[in-house]
Length: 238
Image 1 (cartoon, rainbow, N blue to C red):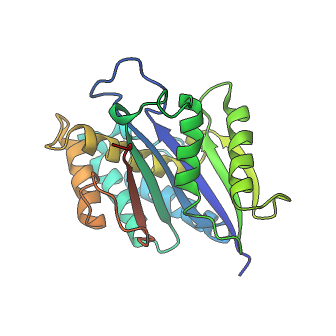
Image 2 (cartoon, helix red, strand yellow):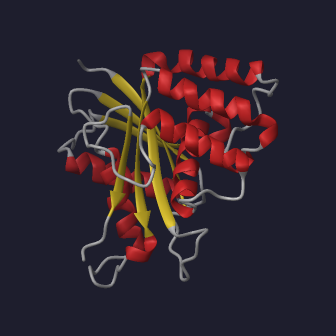
């Protein structure tokens, strides 16, 4: 087999919170995988979706920008994801009210890396090669991705890094697929924060579309074998 895959990753509400509220309660880590050989074709399709909706190719599509005026473009992007056989999505959802780092003698950073590993290892087949890209968040990003690559490589006994060849930071406005990850994890977070629907009609419509296409409430784990759209709801030990 020996195919090269790109995995584009993003995160929401991943920082440690002293006070948990509705806005920061759910930590979501997600990624989309595609074959390297297909990425340019996919980028061009997303560019066409923007063009058909009179949106500049330089404009960034993000969950925070979902509004009635551009709703059709966002719906077309979601439908494109579900119709495109080359794209696979995985996310892990963590209710931070369940976290108890002291009990398990770990820091929030330790838990962050464990969670990222749990999200990403689902994608990894040792017969293939992978380049992993994370959205640039802060000045400590380069340290984070180096550690993440080490953890992933060690877990797969990939000590010479022939499977996970590269981890790299990128800016979301430069990569169309990363914008799609942002949209999906934003919708998942919103669905968990507002299980009966939030105040934004446009965002509620995007959540409903994803629920309909995935046949999942976005608040429940899918089966581990769900290869198109996979969710894992982390639960703390009782």
